[in-house]
Length: 229
Image 1 (cartoon, rainbow, N blue to C red):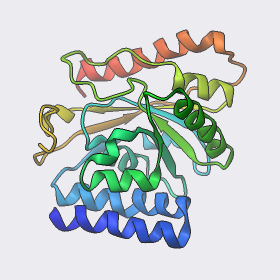
Image 2 (image 1 turned 90 degrees about the horizontal axis):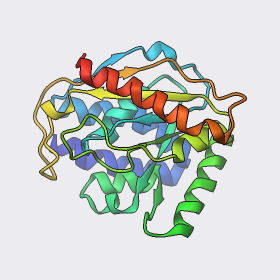
Image 3 (image 1 turned 135 degrees about the horizontal axis):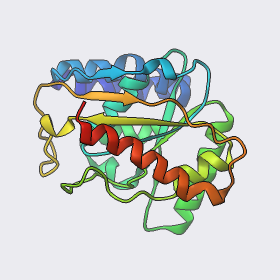
């Protein structure tokens, strides 16, 4: 485990220098994520990956309970040659090892800065135009409560509608069995289930549809989390 979490950021950094963001993202998804998870003896079960179409860009939303989510998310998305980048708060870069990966492959935002939030939003639009998917945690931060989900922010749903891009919903079930949010690094071997739902077509939607879209996604996730697949 120690070898993989040290080697992966090192290799990602050099791939970034040689091949740029998309090449780094590709390698993170297709060998970096599996290497890290398998070395920790964490084996995600992926359901409905067939819903992901090759060469298609999405706005992806997922629930967020643990740091290891940022490795499980790409592991579940792997469908060559698709790649995605994700929106991450700037504070995550301070986490040892994980922070170095995030610096290379994520869109960083300082939540305390209005300018930073606006710039990150503009940049995500540019990334989508390049055919790279964008992933956003609609809860905004890790859920450290006993509730299935925290309230959702509008950002991901506005982005999907403004870009008329399909919204792809990913729900991670069982993460609390292997990770405890009360500790920075508290992961044990085990299985989690990652469920994809059929993409939601945003064609023709307007910003007036944001509340309904947000509620629809929330109900999808809660359905999986309460059912405990």
